[in-house]
Image (tube, helix red, strand yellow):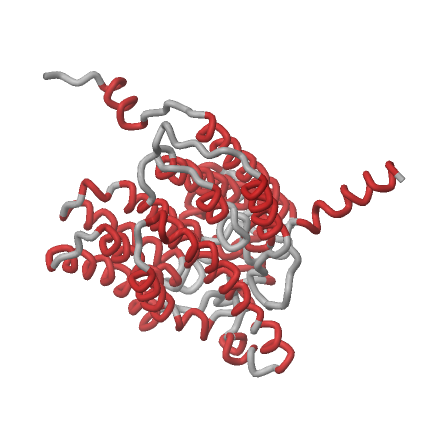
Length: 396
């Protein structure tokens, strides 16, 4: 029987928007607009050394090196299109965040949307992380998160070909940023929480692990310095100046977390990440009953994945970013485990539920996670406070 391509695509996407899905899609769209606005300022107007510079590390200055794949790609694209590399990077970042939200929506669209799941989704340590600390936006972290989302969405099509495709994607992600390797265990976690882990699938996971490890070892053994002295002139000749040289291109090994934490004031600031971890973990523990995942299994998974990423916490100072990646990937696992939506699922609005909703809203608003340097940071309520003060003055 011949299948009509349009009907087949419609059946796959199944875009029957319920009210909850419409609100979800609208929230994602608003987030994308906010992120795009911040990216334009950081990337195009200020040409930030991290948010733009990290994407423009290239092989043209010194040959093969860590993070250089993206820069060489954008320089090649600049040769072809004559468009300023900053504009090209901005466009790619917006597309990646758009893809992230689309894939999240596809994973969520048939799931039971409870308050407890929405709190995991719009949480200062997951999606609201980018709003709480605008300096965290536009990093390459989004690439490995997108790959995990694709992995979860294609789980039922498990095959050797699929594994090889994802191995290539993980290898590319590691060449874009070496941190990708340290989050590969989440791909095993998808198999683990599916309850279908066996010897054959462990072989598939070994392929994925090697896909990240081989590029990482190659970078460690033969990688040149990020800046070999010609980067500034190469970028300037293509219209990129600004503050681009003040980020990754000036970062040295003396700036590792181990050295930074030797300072007493920095150690005190970074101790707040323990509190951020606890605040982020609490709603995930509460949601375990809806994700049908035992506490022991979840804590074991947490221990393995965090232990695997310990080198990141020792070498890099962006602890908030590492926590954000971890909790976003755990969020993907929890969405994956959430049962399908029950069309008759309704709950009466009671005083108890109303109070709980207000408390959950306060939980989201009163804290946010700095991507580095630590210390306590007030949440999105700090953006609401001037507006509240204005209305109070009008009234009184």
